[in-house]
Length: 395
Image (cartoon, rainbow, N blue to C red; front, top):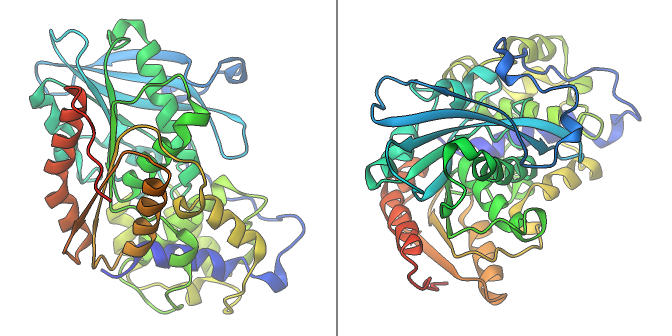
């Protein structure tokens, strides 16, 4: 499957074109249906909480994970406009282990509906990397999986994902009933989850300076959304369903700057509503026969400055901050989904700034194969940081 993320951002730029960009949006984005579980509803005074403050917690059982205490933790976070939002993370803690190391694993969400978040989908195929994510339980670590796309499931919004990830870890330390206040902390993730992870690492020195991270491992990162948006046309594409989801997710996060719904034709508006609450497999299946040309009112790819600005704001390649924690980046050199050169540029910039970077290159072309091959190295990298070993530098 070739360049799903590229197709995603092409949809965005196709539908937000320079010549017809309205001063104010007349179509409201289609947000996901509110979660019927009241646990996921933000309180009216959410703005009175500080980022990372705990709103509520609950403990529950999950059959396959016997011997593990499992909690939902709701917390206050911030969206890309600086407004308060509520986030949720799911944490699994080995029973009877005091102060276990904690890894926040940002899973592949790739969806538009709240039902697709790890807080709901941990046992389903909608969290395809769940098995690898929970492997550290066998090492005696606690594992958290945040719903890092926020309450609007804004797939593609990288800056948002970084803030929610950091606030989720803050909340886990502040929830005294969990017993994680003194735990060492690491972050990990791949592909979209790697994007959230890498953004959290880069934002930590300024957004959450009090948060101490032992290490970070991020792989398969879509590091330059602008670059990816320019590499594909308007025709049919096997990954169009996820492409569409990313465009809709970015509109949800930037409704005034990216009024994509204004630029859809009738079929496009119907398809927007049809997919608004759906998950990865549904989106892929129903997107296979569709294209940007079919759903957009305009068929010209315009260079819209506002759309470009949003893409750059969510591209790690263009984010100037440098991680302070030891970080491992891994990527397939011939990855046809997420361009290698963008990640190589990020690694080179971090190395030049003196950051403790380990950049692992795999001579692999298939995107998800690199995830499987690189994850054992990632876990070993983090375990060495938990043991206090000096971080290697391999640029």
